[in-house]
Length: 112
Length: 113
Image (cartoon, rainbow over all chains, first blue to last red; front, side):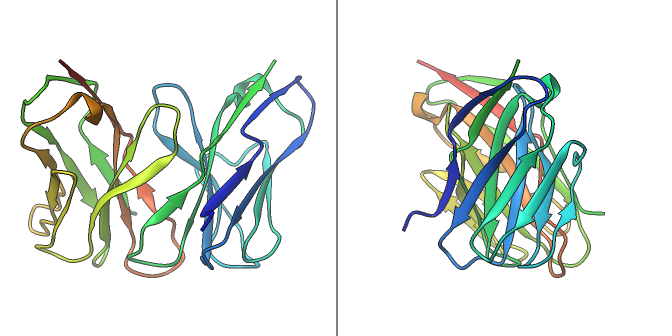
């Protein structure tokens, strides 16, 4: 199984540009998450989707939008990138309560 | 609300030393508890888990026991290796509902030969 697949793996944007980070899982998981991880820091939740058709804000949602396209896919969009959004972005999925989360390999985004 | 507190790093140990990374949690009901590990340049992967009180999770020589009375899930390893150098995250998933899984801030471990 592929697990959780994120694309792209690396991206450099100019300030003000937009882009969408893609995430797909093939494990029939119900919940999906987007986190950012800044150097020397832990994970901060941006948005999550507890089930298909629902999305909720996390700790740091400003400047981002998400779409739960179907059960498999959960995308994260930066409408107007800012240098403060330079980070490593991780997508994760989980089947339900009491089960483990599976993570993608991350997208390293630099905004110049 | 739900939260996880783990000891601040970084932690630097010599090879074969004993490791403890403390983790305490606040949650309603009976959450499941996890330790994840992140090796340099990679995503997080599950190290071990425990789903109910007094359960002991173990993997690769690491152990952690779910202590409801002290709301703790401390990670231990008797003899660390250089290859254990990584960032370790304590986490919980709530008992029910749509609230998201919750992570601690991570503890960086460096093991020197």
